[in-house]
Length: 133
Image 1 (cartoon, rainbow, N blue to C red):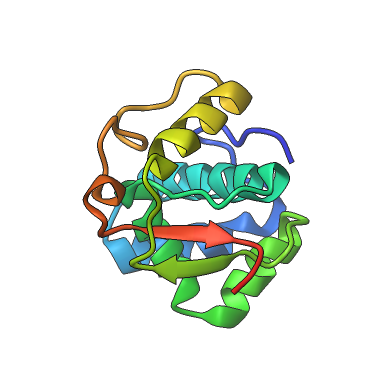
Image 2: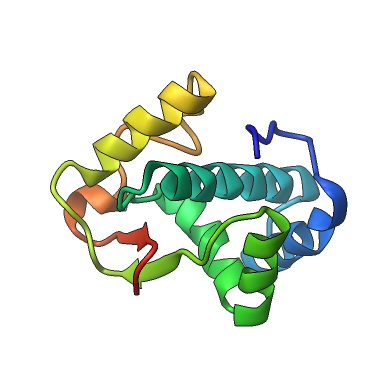
């Protein structure tokens, strides 16, 4: 799946967008943007085979979808992605920087809002994502 641009919703993705909107209390366009960045992150993590760390902004959207495990599984299926485990509190030195590197290689310049230079991951309070639980 290629980059999801802000404002683009693929097929039945509206249900996930609405989940993010309601859970985080954000507007429809921000929920769509967060969903797109989440899908981009999950796609990058899956295709790289590396354990990556999301930004706090993206992780909030991930948590919103994860609150309903069947919804998270459906999102991965809709995006043709394998199951990617969310591991709270696990970070690796340089892991967030590696995420930024891979994301920008794949998608070009990243938004400072969605992908700031520093994130909770830098403080050891983030989480990571991988193919194994």
